[in-house]
Image (cartoon, rainbow, N blue to C red; front, side, top):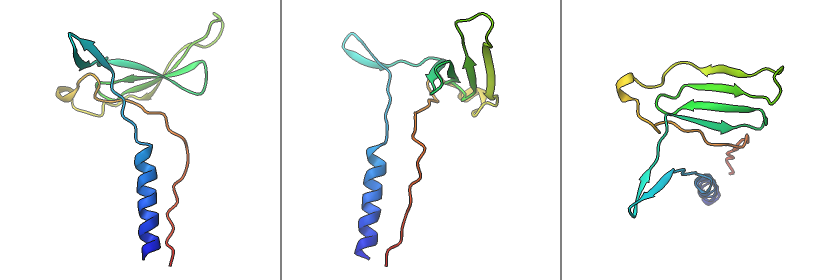
Length: 110
């Protein structure tokens, strides 16, 4: 039983240690205020591709750009559905966080 508790605590500590808090803050007259924008661009592992997020309602697009005139440029819709009702939209309501693709395994040890 102690081993199960130990592994549970160890797992909880490791999960909580990677939790992220991202606040865009600006200082105005000595007071910190959160800055929110209606749209944000997030980099991906592909140098020529970004994810554009509507921070008000969670809609997303994949944005391609190029320095050559002949290459493909533009946006591809990833999520066209609003995740909130229109009256609940607010700048900065949604954001994206980078993650690592890994699996957390839980083991029962007798």
